[in-house]
Amino acid sequence: MCELNTPTIVTRCHDNGTGANASDDTFSYTIKLTGSNTGAEYNISGDDMRPALTYNTMEGAFGSFLISDGYISLDLTDSNDATCTLTNVVVPAPATCSGDVDIELSKAAFAADGTTAATSAKRGDTIVYILTATNASATNTATGVQASDALPAGVTLHTTTSPVASQGSYDPVSGLWDIGTLTPGQSVTLTITVTVD
Image (cartoon, rainbow, N blue to C red; front, side, top):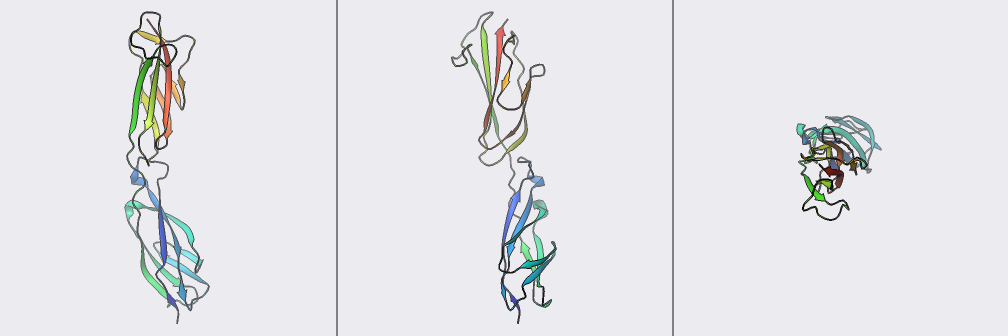
């Protein structure tokens, strides 16, 4: 008589490239089914449909199920014996893998050498501003990161030294630094050289 054992099921979360937005997180699953007196293959029906899977083999990954929709339920049926079945096998939705990110932004002013702190300045002096953006999250990637930094009154962009972003682009007219994606723990810098009016 055919008999199916409780399967081994492993789920995995996918953030869909939006590390800060858990609402679109999906999951996939892998499955390994064993049994006795079975045929060579089994089929999945229910909330997912998969024909001709091999026993004693980890199959998948299958699916792109919204985590917010909760678990899925599967029926597993031997391909040779339709009465040999496990019904309502629950595949639990994992926890979301997206979450809030904390972008830290700091700004420091230096003398023309870029290393000595600028404690004072007079007309004609060169000042180097270094902005640092850091993704302080240990696990979540930030996407579409932007920072805004308009030049303070009393300074103008240096005529021969353009702003330099280690990542992304900076528009000195609007003050917008379009950084893009920051992985967990990643820091990037924007260096702006100005002259005191």
